[in-house]
Amino acid sequence: MKIDSKVLETYPGLITGYAVVKGIKVERTIPGLEEMKRQIGEKLKAKYASVPLLEVPEIRAYREFYRAQGADPSKRRPPAEYLLRRSLEGRFPTINTLVDIALLATLEHWVIVGVYDFDKIKGEPIVTLASKIETFETIDGKQINPEIGEVVVRDSEKIIAGYTAGDARATMITLETKSALIVFWNTPDISREQVEAALQSVTKYVNQYCSGKVEASGVLG
Image (tube, one colour):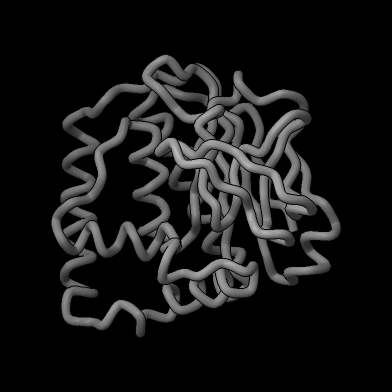
């Protein structure tokens, strides 16, 4: 995986981490992971239940970075904000074991974590900027186009994800997924150390809950 120099020139402080994981076994859910989700949920409630969420520094940081990319965070909520709200309501999502691991790491480290079926990616993925109107289908079936200048991940054929636009259905994780690309994004106000910690957590969880082995990883920017 690589990063376009234009991204770092436009958004100094943006960090992208990645991991390529092979030999994955994706399941709907498993008891150990559900228990960890419960424990993390309790910690989040204890810390944030009485706090106005828009006053949480990390949420403010993501909202500001959404605006910097031309998106309205009140209409398209950053993942960390959406997940914290769901968690405080006792409705943390259950998608599948690999996706749930990524969502947990997002809340644990305030780093956006996306997971994509590596076998459906063509060529070397690159983090770059959207330079034209280009529509893709998101996981929930919506047709959307990233804002011009938005940070995106794409392969040689298509957009895989947009920072504010979300993830593409074309590379979504399913129970048949055997290999995955995991991407980590901060905002300029979230530290490199947090990105590195999220990368370490996810690689540990993938091995623990999905039997996967990391074949390549790194931090760009």
